Image: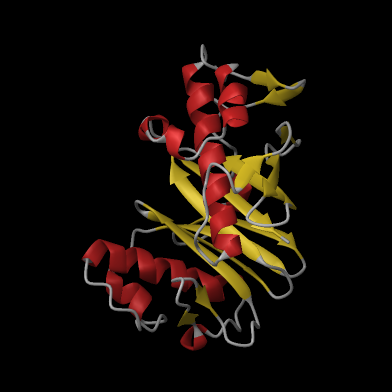
Length: 238
């Protein structure tokens, strides 16, 4: 039996496995979402050997570890899956280690987690994406990224271990997505980006998270997050 909870008056299906049957496509494309006419994201479950990706992805970066190289290739492989004319051969790496396209035909962001890779791309808007495994490890490092207000919010769920774990992972993933959206490094995860209001749930089980990015003048952001099994996905588009 599926469990459901309520947060701020909204139904919170945190302990349910998301129904993504209609989104699961061929090969190992685990999930795909068309955000708007110019912005798309997808998650790939890595089940193929390296040669499968090398047939389409130029390996310009020196990645020595075999599994990290596989993650790297899978993330890049997703980009032309989102937009057929995505020019992979033109991708460059900034001094901050952020990949980009000169001329910005597309803004994009990539994330890896275990045997999953995720990518988001947009022809018109800045983007950031992150995926994370749901694991108790996140609670052991939570003091490094949670603000006092965020800790207070999570304390309301201290008696519901699984919900607390999921929400902590969602906040961490959202902040990683903001970090990639910003792209210039030197960001304090506790002080420069903070949850700025209650989480809200939509009918399709997406979470809306209002955030404030405070590196200089505050910038309001609206993060979107979704819980799968065993992943959390978060992204930001501006």
